[in-house]
Image (cartoon, rainbow, N blue to C red; front, side):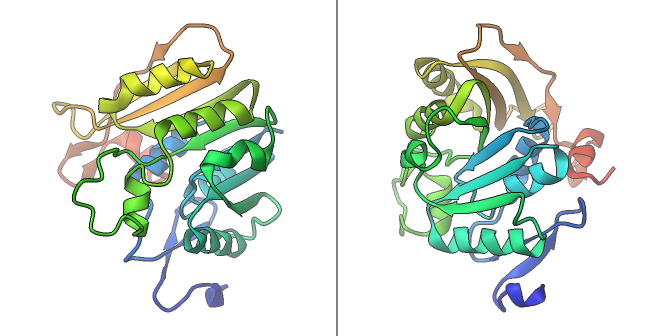
Amino acid sequence: MENLVRSDERLDDLQINGYKIIQHPDKFCFGMDAVLLSGFAKVKPGEKAVDLGTGTGILPILLAAKTEGEHFSGLEIQPESAEMASRSVSINELNNKIDIIEGDIKTASQIFGKGKIDVVTSNPPYMTNMHGLKNPQDAKAIARHEILCTLEDLIRETAAILKPMGRCYFVHRPFRLVEIITLMRQYKIEPKRMRLVYPYVDKEPNMVLIEGVRGGGPQLTVESPLIVYDAPGQYTKEILEIYGMD
């Protein structure tokens, strides 16, 4: 197992099912947003799920642990990240349950086919403004900024690969919520469930979790706020439960 981890990488314990993930400390590492999305998304028995822009492969691995989905695919455009994610799948002996595909979100419908996927998840780049970026090809920059794909690319391809009444789950920033909902409806994905994430109970939200259904009827449920910290460095009970540390 350990020979799958290179000397400049680390092996992190995901604290669920004994699963671990390989990460490179100088490149993009998964954050709380991916973990919260894994707790918000639902994959039912027999369903196939695709994670668009999978990065380290964190979402397919967590969803394989937390749900009864039949199969999970992660699509990642950066060769190094895709290769690292594949090694994490192997370390967890999940090769029969998860596959990592090197490819472009903009061509997801060519890769997976149209109307064949039950669930799509994505933790996409949040930022559109690339002003001041020293190296736009840096792994961290690509993960955080819309350099290689836009929000519209993501939602268009999500709609294309989802089955009728298939579901998608995104985590994003609240300042782009109007744009997210507008694009979802433009591509016939109806927002059905939304939850705002607040760092502290008295602060503004800094994340939004949103579920959509392809071809669904218009009815949006706004769930209770998710608060991350009770005090500095002290997670709330619900966050501990999502992380599996309660």
